Length: 296
Image 1 (cartoon, rainbow, N blue to C red):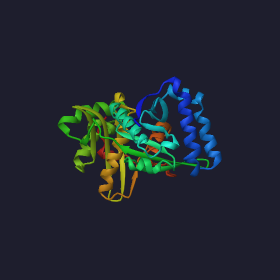
Image 2: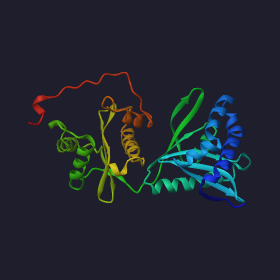
Image 3: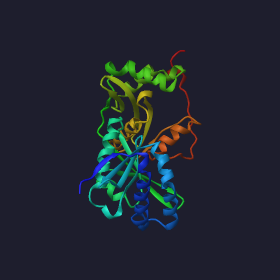
Image 4: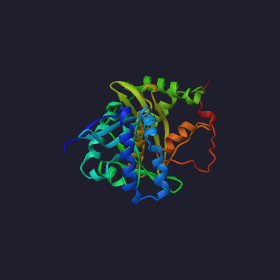
């Protein structure tokens, strides 16, 4: 039987709810206790689904005009992928995910994330996702999984003649540097003097739209100057830059990656926590070397 995929409408809320609740009580119930299933199910009543339709891109799969599966895209996060239990294993979920991934690429998403149930982990693994961390909500265990999408915004090594002016402008806009030792031009010169190949830019044609610098001392790695142009934020580009830097450090044998965040910047803390980083019980200390500082 043929399956058609389309955007969900308000009139689909009841059918979407029925598919999700059936899957929860049939498929997911084998991996989670009854109280977890009940708590999750309460988020997918017809009324709750109507609210979700206003906040996410929701798709439905239909056979004979009946809703048999659903999936949603929330910026760069896949959510609520459920298939009628009687029709699972027939490729309907995969068909929905092909559409979801295409929509994500068209929106400029470079790293697609999904908070997967234990039940769905094999499904997402077959689609190319990999687990980056576990999250617990009480006794409910969720696996955060990611997949790097082919990007229209390539990430490559910084080239001074092509990129200097744009990188300096982006950093000034993103970080608002106001001290002589943090001037973008000086930071670029110092990094180029090390010549370690760990300075990366993301581009849209000839425009620099993101940056990341990494460092490696033979044991630990560091990430610095992660910046994304405002017009390209919330599309997964920052996560893609971080993953690119991580892979470069891993290839060098790095055992642990560190980074620093200004106190009180909770949004950035959340960004890195979503990528598997954690706040550690450390005190960051620094000392300026006066003879090497530029004159004000």
